[in-house]
Image (cartoon, rainbow, N blue to C red; front, side, top):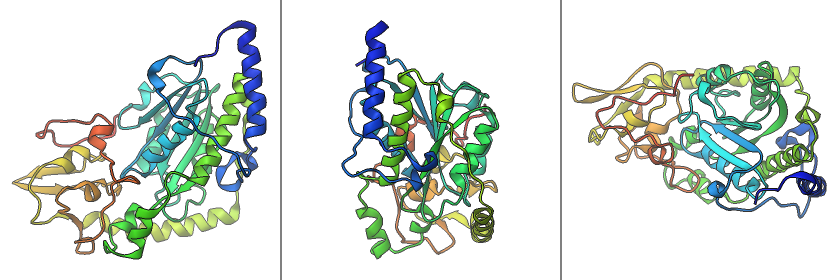
Length: 347
């Protein structure tokens, strides 16, 4: 419930901060992927966020191609819901960068592409209004290697005045690789059987966020929680090598998309493509040349008709950690079937 005003509010906020100091371990440099959650520490709670307006607002902005980052964004919100704050979870497909709701703290999340955020996500961050008095967390989902993705995006936001508060990477099944593996392979089974109800990296990040929110509630300025964003020459070299390998293998894939004979022209792919890259022309589905390679179209096609060459025919399809990822429903993207496509909104 919302904390009252006056002396009672101050005492309760101070008590909350004291509780969080014991409850949450301070993370190494504020980054979840280098911290350890103490034995027995938990962050939980679930309720109706809209039941009442709360004194502080945390805005979680993210992009999710096939459901992983969406799941982690909501996972973090559930871990923090018991605090006396308001939490908004929004896809960037719902909110133009220039119309972001007011917030006290911001968290941004993305799937790793070439040890960074996707290029269109970087552009979205550049269009966010500069804020010199607001703190920001960055999180990402990774199939294998995140490299300096979190730190790089913290630097981008810090250059626009945001106060970097930390972040972390969360390991999830890689949707790029899953589309190329047999349905009954051990990799497919491992992806389906992963314990998505207990994500340690996300728990550590939630603990850090809880610590900062508690401190601000107790009256501390957000600047007290600023983290230094480290630079590692060795990691930068590794990132460059990884990016070169990634781009060498993925760029040609963008030219191999097609819809096979199973396509029934339902036009779902044209409605959910965030790149505005798919259209129906002359009775056939055509793919343009500015694919984001989010693979949403492949994994969401109800007929499994969309392929990359012959490599994905009859292979595994991923619809999020719980198998229920539906961008049309979740993001309010219900568009007429005649609408050619969907694009990430301009700021």
